[in-house]
Image 1 (cartoon, rainbow, N blue to C red):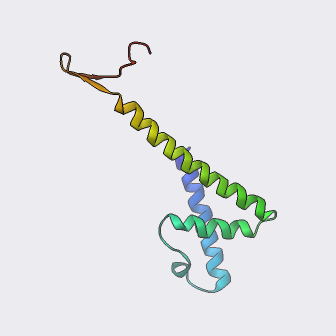
Image 2 (cartoon, rainbow, N blue to C red):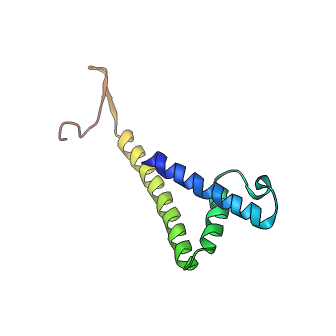
Image 3 (cartoon, one colour):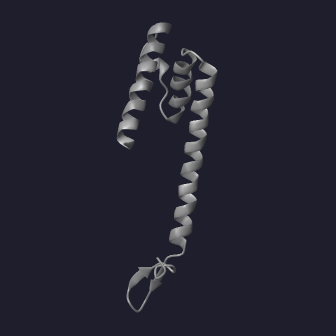
Length: 102
């Protein structure tokens, strides 16, 4: 599912960049900037051409905010879970303190 969403997002971004390049009469290499900032150029431009563009723009940036919060939550969760990992010298394996209750 993640691969399909990434592929679809790439198609949307590059289609929008092609539209922006053709409408302004410049090559795509001058329109595109590398990196994650591309999402802040291509998607807002595509959303501005749609009907109800303010609604779609708010939804898009809300999704970006939620994705950022999700990434931070998973990072903190992994630090908490693996921070509690203990090494038993007698058995030579790693164990979680709550492993016997799960």
